[in-house]
Length: 380
Image: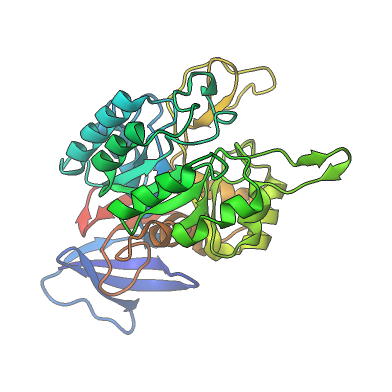
């Protein structure tokens, strides 16, 4: 048994100072204030030194580390995120992959999921194939802009059905419902997101009964608001804000470029802390930094100067969110641990509770990571 002492436990809606947490067989077995919980004899003891102990981060949407895509070097990318506290990660594919590249990536990532060097890799986030080709980086090379073709997409569904936790779709694509139904036929638990889309509200809402419950990188790569001259229309962002079932993913960089800090605060006010998911959306791109972005270090750009994801890890995204919105450490742990775990169907992690996996991160008040614990094993 492992005992963590001298900790400030980060719970879903409060803190427990001067706390003890007991771990056995990779699970949390008991926790509470030290004055009420004695450490059993014979325990291994880890002194948290008065730092915060929260649930390990769950990053459901990341493609890369700061150099390579997940499918090019799964170990390097998994470890890059693990040492910063991400104890569960979904490897994100992208719409720029053709069928053969999708299948190769799925094969590599499936094998990596059983590799002990990728212990936090828990499945796939399928950002593609069927998004709106008007949106996203490298869109000029999107190979899926033509008609939705069952012969082309079924091999991808067949290859990924059991490990793909989340599928991104543009609901306005003609024939998308058939694609969604084919995914659900293979995996009834599959989750869908509205992504890279200019769909009308009705097109998005029609997919909610099939499991659409996430807005991919909310307010990024979404449709125009100008429907008529001098009349403000509605688009994907308004539907994500309006529908209580839908979680809003947020990329929170240091400058507030992906999402303006005012917008972050507005979305938080509308959605509430239980429907926001912080993601890193880390991506491998080496395009030149365009004018006006001098000094930006946590965003990538493609060869056309388009924003291409980030260089974030979730602990940094949490810190940025606290700075931009005034959220507390309790709030950001919910957004980076509990909410994504719930949205993606990981019911055994994401919060400190008896019987939950002992995936934990020890950090200071600004999310600088001191130690990471995965299934009860201290990694750092």
